[in-house]
Image 1 (cartoon, rainbow, N blue to C red):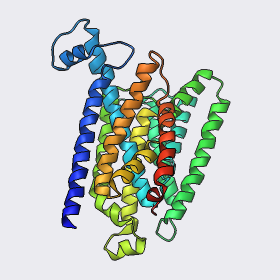
Image 2 (spheres, rainbow, N blue to C red):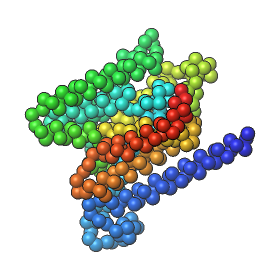
Image 3 (cartoon, helix red, strand yellow):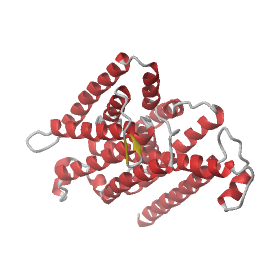
Image 4 (spheres, rainbow, N blue to C red):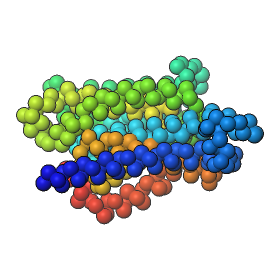
Length: 346
């Protein structure tokens, strides 16, 4: 039995290393994708510090493509890990950032900023990103406050409060789109709601990475506790877990990370559901492995999806949410039919 466990652990570490290797390779290849055709050899020379003509290629690589790839990796990693965390906390296989109203709050915040044409900036983020970040955090705080009953926040009331507030904010966002007199604002809002990495730069990368690093560090610390929470809450308490306090901390951390990611990329769906389930099917439900593997595959998938956009539709920008839904939905249906018993063990 011991040898089987060691073998499983080795396979998981090997899989993690292979996935990280592919993430690096795909990230490097993605620097050659885009409207400006830059040969692989030129990219390699630029990355090694050599001079290449025309000089604009160096600017494109370091100031446009690499920040976009890094931001895509960070956002994909965050959404996938947040989805895995919400599924663990709520013991609901369909849980993702939409469930707690995080994405709806971000959408409403962005809609308000676009509707009223706010133009301020802070910390390198524009008004839309700041409003989206604030909206996501405010929605999460409101839902958690509404769900508390007798000092506790039962899973059922959290889900119901999340669905209700999410629906309310989605309706408010639609109302703002309907009443705006400027078609330009409607187009901007629609583009933001479907997600995009087109505005990526190093400032956005640094700002989002700061919040996300803090939040994911907290989640990583509680990765074993997430395994325990898969048990009944009474059993988890019997094992010494302060269930309500831990749930609050983990939900707050996942929501902070999601809010930071959504504020710089817009709303990108499906990653939070597809990636954790894929990892769970192929490697099991141990959250000490599921979280890092979900993060790597989430980043890899979003970089690939963004690469499709730049390869197939340049110089136009197709919203990345369209690609994640188009590629993700059929794959999710296949997984659901092939492994439905393993996917829904709760």
